[in-house]
Image 1 (cartoon, protein in one colour):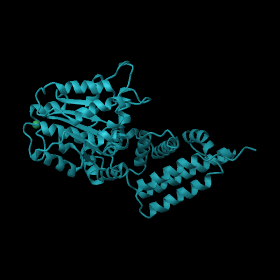
Image 2 (tube, helix red, strand yellow):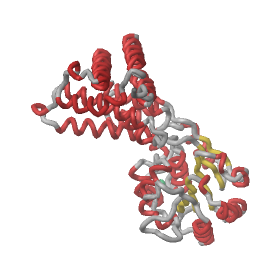
Image 3 (cartoon, rainbow, N blue to C red):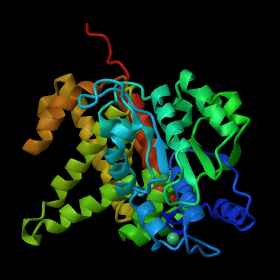
Image 4 (cartoon, helix red, strand yellow):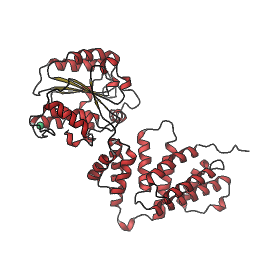
Length: 407
Ligand SMILES: [Zn+2]
């Protein structure tokens, strides 16, 4: 990981580079920042930089033996601690090192922009809590006692240090307080409130803020080439979180790929396409009403919104909303038993029969008002992704309104 591969965060990079030039690399540093800000990437880039044999004033070289080992995360003087738990494969006394191959692959395949939830899913402990346990800490401390193999600095990266189990803290603390020579601890966290005060007070803070929209847009455009419309809406909706921007861009890119595979003669008719998009949008809105909402589901909603607004045509967005409202009115008629008023294609009828239970006299008026309000905003040039994100939350709420009591 070179500094140049981290998106934005220039001030932090400069500060870290300066610390090396001035020979004052602090032996215990806490990389703190919101999800998707690149704090883990920054810690690893810094570690690579301080060990690079041919570093420049701006970055590590990327090609010396140390950098090459760092790029695969296989340097013998680079150690990791991260939250883990028992799994089917590791069913007793789990240690970070048991998961090292998965960890390396997880980081490298995600460009070092990762979330705790995704890690838990990767190793199959999403229903449990991950912990950094005392045995793990002991193991690392033992490794510190050994002479460094080949690096200038021995580096210990502790990812999500807030997951440090109580019993593990004192041992680590002792080493942070009286470190072996040329040994550095890079702690990474997004929730400093739960880190023991004793650890906080002994570390130097490296604070990352949300990544700027411009940096994210530039990166997404260069990496995924989705066109400026999709790119800027992804950057806007990602709200400084590089990880969710990448997730959204991947979905979008996959979709383009699939669409590209369909021979033009077999392309779906536009009416059915519009119907499928509407059905997907309603489902996504319905899912986010669930209290157990996870980020992934929300990102899927955002991806659907991106499809709705993808070509940036305001007329098409208005048409989509008019069509949606017509479908909802048909749902109401179907629900009320006026089925002769409901004239649709077979695939639309199938949806209406299932979905009509959520549309009734207690919410239809609000749907009409809100859809019309959205059309009004489209006509006044409000950005499509803002309109549809806002409307999705309203739809989610309206779908939860109880129908009138049966007589
Ligand atoms: Zn190098």
